[in-house]
Image (cartoon, rainbow, N blue to C red):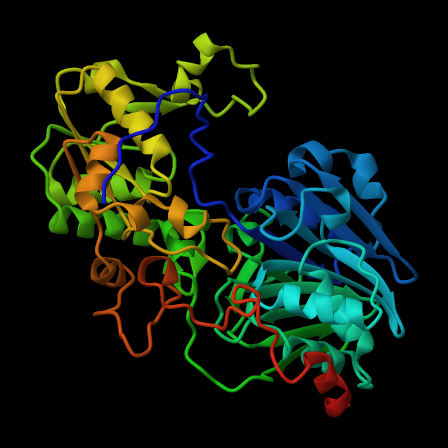
Length: 492
């Protein structure tokens, strides 16, 4: 079906119609500047979450916690803040809320005093049975201090009767569904864990002989740390004074990392799963040029996320690459209280046309994805207002037809443009002369795979295919029988 574009009656933030990043985690063990290094690592991971940041350190006797709403550079730049985080071990977290409100008690790392001592934990991902587990825990008498699914793991560890911390932690992990990359800190250990499918990324690095866990390699680069390897899917890593200890508590299975880490979430200079994110995005653009050529005078990226794909498209097509849209990075969400006249400016507060490049030309606009489509239609209008003769929109990923439940904040399905419109309907909605998406097969080729294996997909690609790799217990409002908490007692 098709539908017309909405009236231009609101101030549009070009970032509002994007897939939202999840979170970023960082941890270091044994370094005298642990908190300062963690702050730098979080700064490099800022793209993964801009709502809040937190650091917990341990000084050999007690834990210290600083959790703030806002950006890392605004909240952890002062020496006085770092001085309140002494110790040679620390974990940190940057947050975009996919579960729980943006309030201070939800800012991670979360911390609790357990029977064996303190435990701080930060989480990137989303537990698809987190609400179910939470309700069961509350019925059993648990007192929750936050509304985030991350708190569940604290309670599961606390309720375990195993003797060793690692066994209690693993026992809790066995009850979780969905995606997670955990970084935790006890009074003796740095802890890392990745879900059995490896949906969310986690890497291991080393600085001055000290182990580091981080969501992406860009967090290692900023501090001059050495990349060691990716944490394997389903792996639990423990670092203590005796060294490193790797545990594989889950049955072996092929990894299925989230394909959107390569399309949009990870920083272009990161290496994820042995692949350069920048190179993958460029190759997506080249594949798109082969699948959906256009007769045009210039290739223009929608900044910033469309830039690598636009370079690849231009190189493969032979059409010149130009910056036809200039982005203002210094306009905040509360820059101005919009009057109706200001609302008419729409997307121009952050995106402006480079008229000298656009006027009189046939242009190919390259973006990484279309979610609701509201920003895309604004940008097409802006190009036409700047004198573009033709506007051909090309998207360097397949149509997003299904929502995500693994840590990406996507709209419900009826708000996704590709789920409610056919290709022609989408083209009319955004007002382009033509519209095309990269195929699922094309994006697998860009990832270096010959083709998508329909029986065992190599990536978590449910946003395009509807094939969710884990149960969606909370979504279907079903409690998993038998009682998951009773399994704790049985396992003990």
